[in-house]
Amino acid sequence: MKTFKPWTSVMHSIYIAENDLRQSFKSVRHVVWSLLFPIFMMFTFSFRYSTTGGTDIEYIKNILVPGIVGMTAMFGSTNETMSIVWDKSMGVFDRILAAPVSSTSIIVGKTMAGAVMGVISAIVLLIIGTTIFNVAFANIGAVLLIILLASFSFTGIGTIISGLASEPREAMMLSNLLRFPMMLLGGVFFPISAMPMPLPYIARALPLTYATEALGAIQTGYPYTVFFDAIVLLIYTIGTILFGSQILMRIMTR
Amino acid sequence: MENAIEVKELTKFYGSLLAVDRVNFTVKSKEIFGLLGPNGAGKTTTIRMICGMLRPTSGTAVIAGFDVSQKPLEVKRRIGLVPDISNLFGELSARVNLEFMGKLYRLDKKTRRERIDQVLELFQLKERQNDLVKYYSKGMHRRLTVAAALLHQPEILIMDEPTSGLDAQTARLVREILISLNKEGRTILLTTHQIEEADKLAQRVGIIDLGKLIALDTPEQIKNSTQGMRALEIKILNGEDQQKWLPILRQAEGVDNASLAEGKIRILSKDLSQMIPTVVNLVDKHGGRIENISVAQPTLEDAFINLTGKSIREEPVSKEDYLKRRLPRSGMR
Image (cartoon, rainbow over all chains, first blue to last red; front, side, top):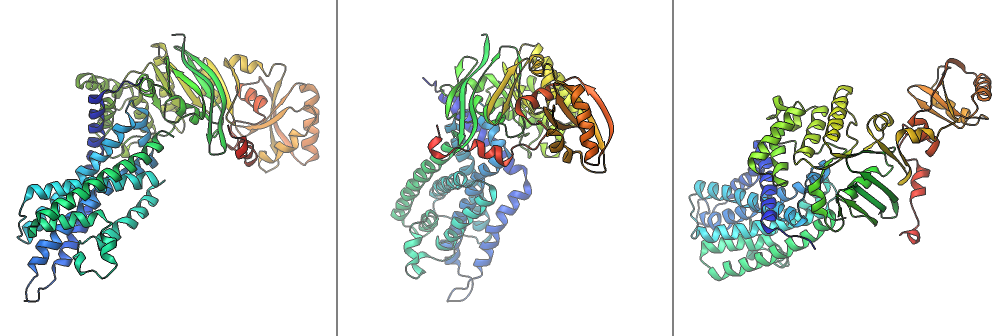
């Protein structure tokens, strides 16, 4: 019979997450480059003028900043989780596999690191967006909850990619195949309602859509939409993490 | 416990490729056991199964009394693995790498700090402990990899090609440490493709080739398998590679095997007196001139050649050997 020590497993997950994040933050250049892309996109799309003249502050407040925050969570989480593929190719994943650490602890640790990276990146963009454009979020607690849920669901996608990809280049291609359509169709730059058919249907299949919609709905004051989107994100989180874990578990116990 | 490692009928298929074929051996407690074989022979796969990192297709491995398939974590707690490649976190310093490993083995803070200081001292890495590992030389990488495996003071140390690619000085340091760890009472299982290493270090050696264990004994006993044989070393002058002479000499009557060793052709034969004139005539007939000729005692390398029909220094897996190990799907176990 296997002896399961919950506290040891929890600590192992924390150590693995801590080690991953330590490596990510060690490289200042890596952190700066990963944040420059969403900052650049946010500024580029902010040059949109309203029909009444001047900058369209309603667009920035309700669509662009929430969209960019959601998108940043997506890039932050997936990039961090995909470090598994690099770890596998460099052999460092074997170092963890050779230690007395359960497969579950490894997956939980990697997931935690991905979610934390997603949340931190999104919060940085949230601070930059709200400060530069002088827009305030109505309910910061709800914003943080949505960012957390979104980060976990993107982490799940990251684990699926990590499980499927055999080497880093394949992981990059797979992730771009998923992330770029999500970025363009997920309501980051254009509201879903403004998209021609059948794009709104495709958008409804993407987790980023629910993250950006929920963050936008917090601004415009639609609590039911926020609640509905949060539930969808939770379902996405559970589904993707379970599926990703299954694939990773198969790799670890070949 | 008499046996630290007991491997029974261990088999691994990768798809239809038979990587390890019903391997059986035991490693006695406090013994240095060498698994010797060319690259691609199945040594690393065997090690990975013993360490619980790879699931065997069939067979069992019992380590420190625990079946690795049933109790992988118990096994992992008791072993220290030095993999064939140095797999440390390059973006972190040596100290942080060791801290992380210590945490995974649940060493408390005080013990962790003490042990890290000890291994850094032992492997002469203290001066550079705070440098990022990615800036380390290959030798330093290797020393740190061994240090990381010793942190939790495992009773069994499993080392996959511990001195591979190291300069002579570092290789000697690693070997010295390995011997002193064994004297402290640790069991060591090492894989190597370096005959001299197995000969010098291991108390018993298992020779593995094409996934099969083909000999298991003390180095002396394995060398005795060449009993009655003598080795002849010749260097041929004809301005060409010595390699081209191997197939010619292998055809000669009385020659049991011919291989290249340190730029010379090494010929094994049971009847040296008959073989020498045959070889000289054959070289002459093919337009070569013998620069140097000497008689030597058979070595472990000769025993390896005698058992496997090839030199351990030859290219790892030939296409023929690869196809031999590939079974039709219906033949899979």
